[in-house]
Image (tube, rainbow, N blue to C red; front, top):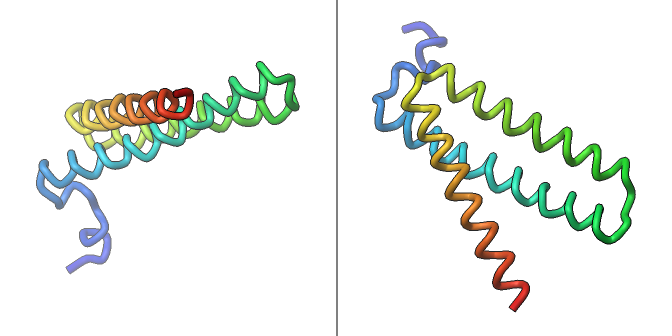
Length: 101
């Protein structure tokens, strides 16, 4: 058996690929929205503008890379990754509401 076949995600079932993309979307989305919150905090509090710029470029690159990897696995995988990102958004918003109250 070829070692490439062992690491190829296409050999896994659709259910496994969708689960991996959903979990990857959760991780990418959580990182994206936490970086967004930190960027907003830096801009409002008058923090370092270069750090805010670096966070912005980093979070956009993270999201783009995550979606690019998901699209290589197909349309359903991309939708699963998007669902993960949206769930992560709700987690971060819920976390922010708990901090404010």
